[in-house]
Length: 254
Image (cartoon, rainbow, N blue to C red; front, side, top):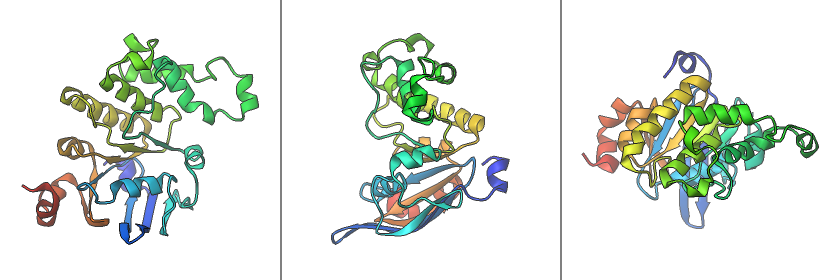
């Protein structure tokens, strides 16, 4: 974790979050904090409550109880658009790119909601003043050669990079990354990790990452939370998680 994250108070705080579906308790009293500049991983077997937790944090579902704070503000009841305006970005398990639009236009569209009202955007430049930011990310993601291609013509791995870049177009303070390596060729996983590390250092923002690729999580994250059956089994550094017997028994398996 960088010096900023060590010295500052939390950016995100989740307190005793609970969500049930009938008799099934998907999330049962989860609490944790994410510091400014921190990359925080969330792991656990299928059915451990990771997706329900994420969707609650993103305003897609309303928890039964508990609280979510962003910079000390209660955002538990806010919807995804309201959270986006407060500086929360996200990626999805499934691709959210616009296949018939160019890569560059995908990035611009992803951030247009941050450019004021519809009236103000009507009189903005054709790229809504976002062209420079789009070009900056295209360079960072090494996508210059495909910037003007339709996103739907790219390989799945390239589309995944576009999807991740879109989440950073509005300079978010917090980005929630839902399985950024899912379906990606193993040869590209290391590149995604390097990109996210560079973005983290460059922006100073915080990331919360759900991912099944253990090598990726252990390499990328400053701290990791392990969930089992809707509860928190452990939170610690990668080394602490690797050596935690309860985690090894319940999840890692070796």
